[in-house]
Image 1 (cartoon, rainbow, N blue to C red):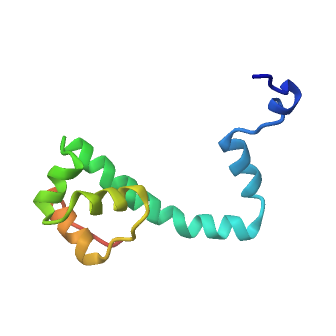
Image 2: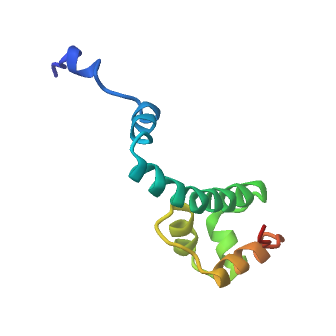
Length: 98
């Protein structure tokens, strides 16, 4: 397979693309809205890993299906407060609003 080296040199990294897009106020506003949600999902993933639990183990402790945990951690599902509470309880954590 032959590659166009000049074209490859013009590709941007994801960080470069993101930095460029953040100059667009509409993009930046939408990103800011999602940033908090992604931080929460990342926290769930991190806490699960720190507890050395698989998705299936966490799901069982929370009375959920593994696929639900997978959808939440991947950002494909927005968990309700009730679901967050069940996950927090399964991880021996409390939810607080600041």
